[in-house]
Image (tube, rainbow, N blue to C red; front, side, top):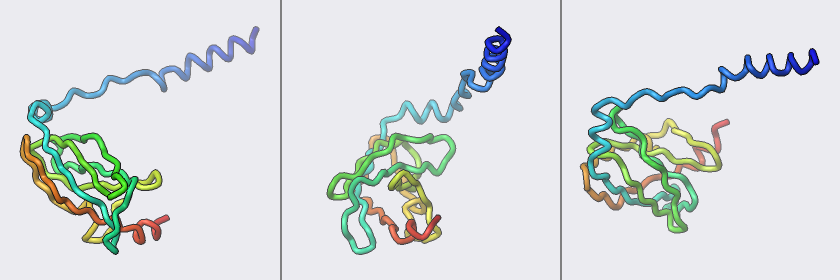
Length: 139
């Protein structure tokens, strides 16, 4: 009986750590941006030799705090991707490969790009460079 009481006491003490937390309300600017038509960004991920990189995650990296994050895409066999992004805003890009997202110190890293989009705009031909060798050097 004492063992059972201790288990329940431990469980009740642990519950507050797992309690639901209400997320903060979005800022009015964020709500206003979310009401706009999305911008479509299409492009390709290639390696340094120009070969397409398949099955790599691509996500828009918003440059302003109001834009918020949009869903990621995964490249097809030709390295092509299509993103639907909150607009107007400016974006860099994050690549995810083998469960990791890395921003390298190289100037050619996609996170350092600055691509501006407007509501309803379609941007095509965005070329992102996958710096595989730089990723493999990191721990």
